[in-house]
Length: 195
Length: 440
View 1 (cartoon, helix red, strand yellow):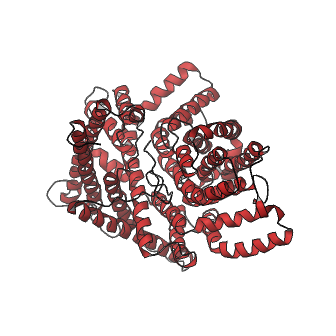
View 2 (cartoon, helix red, strand yellow; view 1 turned 180 degrees about the vertical axis):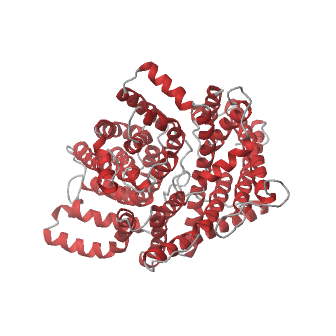
View 3 (cartoon, one colour; view 1 turned 60 degrees about the vertical axis):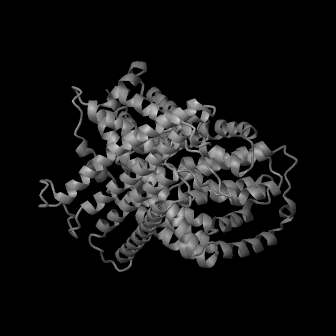
């Protein structure tokens, strides 16, 4: 289970179930990425909330129908999920059941295990990021790979690759931030950076 | 190959690989070495399968309920609800404990997640516990247990996920946990009174001298202040159970209503804080959803490898009695709950255990109630008891002081509720049957 940390005002900040405090990005690249991702998440949440509320209003008050609104809502939801997960990788708030580490004393064994854990994480996430790329290209280039017969939604004819791109991007940035953790753990293991 | 995939999953989880990546690692093994002859599976079909599974409007409710919970906490909406509940039972000995339990049930019914409920109610009520001289261990253990009521008093994220994975009606799953939830509320209040019955340190202060007219006066004044906050559960629960809105629509309405109430009525939010809380809850959502995406892919491979059939074979080797198998499943769920959080347990076990539940003749809706109670029990049972540790830290209570009262809550509250939920199916099936016509 991930460690649960408390903010100064005693708010729960590091559990999958409670709001997590965003660590301020230290370098320019992270600052740009995390701020851009935060704006995307905010936009997606607010927009899909408004669309669903308007659709509810239309259905129950005006007895009308916002035809095919689900297509936009689902698209926004996928961007929210995967961009949120990428920020989660940056914040290290992904759920873990870290039993061995919790009972190991600090030292070389624990540091080595952290490196192994991070290495497995990076390799597996990279494999699935590659599958994410194949998935995205399937939507972008079509099933024949020629840009013909690109899959689209049934009502508004939105190209499905718009949603697939969120999966690919989310996985790529997760790999990037998992790799950052791997580098940090390697430095700690080989003593270049003290705890 | 399936056994190696399971071993990879267990090892990855134990060494601390993030849960979604652990699922992917297990799936990765099966992609390369799974199948009847070890020829592997088509990896390119897995991500589209997960995407198709996740492409569901009902899952968006999870994101929006988490958002509503965050807004409630920062917008001081929870604080006004607690003040209002205090009018009714605050003057009794141990009354603040009852206030905490009922407040957790109300807040949990909106934000639907234990840690969010705990941090929302705990940050307000722990200072009051200390002021009134409550023993630290008892108060922290009580709040840890009460915060799990969000798993039983719907709507909640765990049951939405359960319904999504098992293909059951979300509303039926919600209704199944209502009666066990109310029994849990009553038992928590009773155990709280029993633990504090001989305590001499509790000071109720001026609350003890409240006359009937004082109470009416307080009811009016606090009720007026709390009215906008009280409308939130009315919108969510009334909307869903009144058949006016779907769960997703109710969750969107909750967010849309909570933001102006938090900003303009209780003044706990401004534009910056609203932006922050929405981004923070988006991250929480993303973390949960990637886990769901990875488990959607993994469960497909496990089904192809017939893991439920293998597990059923193991259960049948021990006993063929359905009740005995259900007992073993319960032990398995409690053990899983001791190692993981509630959502991880549900996403991992539901696709594997659901075919077994159907095979031995139990209702999936009944099983939803069993899962709700079981995951609640697991969340407060060490070694991995996130809610217990968080409550200890919020209430400044050492874990050893919390363990004894917590054990009493487990033995006198959770275990009896689990037993009646398992052995009296009509208790959970009563509401789904009468409201939705679900078969017994």
